[in-house]
Amino acid sequence: MSFGLTNAPAFFMYMMNSVFMNELDKFVVVFIDDILIYSKNEKEHEEHLRVVLTRLREHKLYAKFSKCAFGSGFPGAYSVEKGVAVDPSKVKDVLNRKQPETVTKIRSFLGLAGYYRRFIKDFSKIAKPMTSLTKKNAKFVWGPKCEEGFRELKKPLTTAPVLAQPDVTKPFDVYCDASGRGLGCFLMQEGRVIAYASRQLRKHETNYPTHDPELAAAVHAPKIWRHYLAGQYLSHIH
Image (cartoon, rainbow, N blue to C red; front, side, top):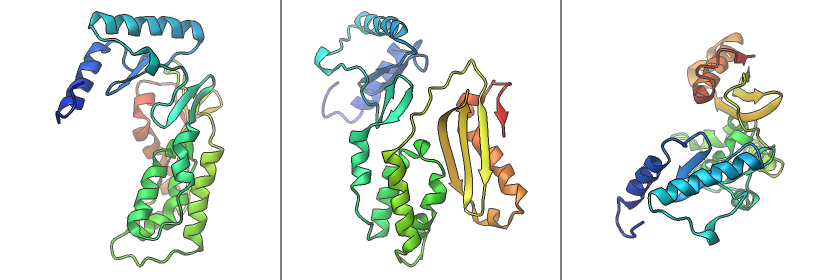
């Protein structure tokens, strides 16, 4: 990839997507010049690796051996035998963050921690005291609830669960819940969590009767995970 050209990354990404058009989202993910190959088992992985290397050679592209690795992060998470786990080396910056002293620093922290929100149950509910400080004309007062939320967002990253890899040939289970603080959902398959999702209640939703926010959660979840649930007539929403 040529250096210094503003459109080089976009063009290279387009080229890589074209090269792996038939393999994308089946066992290949491409991010600029990084290629992730994922498989269910070792034997299948050998075959997938052979296909990728052959496809590169056909287009006169070559992988540098010194930059190839098994079980590497991509990006911020890495694949293990049981699923997807957070990359400890990437979450250090979140864990080492000191108490935010300005709105800008709060947004920076929430943006960084938010990258791992699929690993954190009720992310939006935990972050609500901090996000309220980022609203227009809000007075900046870092109280006990903000400090509690700040610490609570860090804690799950040290014990984040290994998320299961989805299998689109099997039915999914979506569990939804709601409270006065927000909506929470998680996607499961065969008893294992695939991802968490949450959001805060909008201003008009805080006036809803109890059952309406729960219905809003049941609408919110399929929108987020539509790429998993579309066409899955056996999926269940609880």
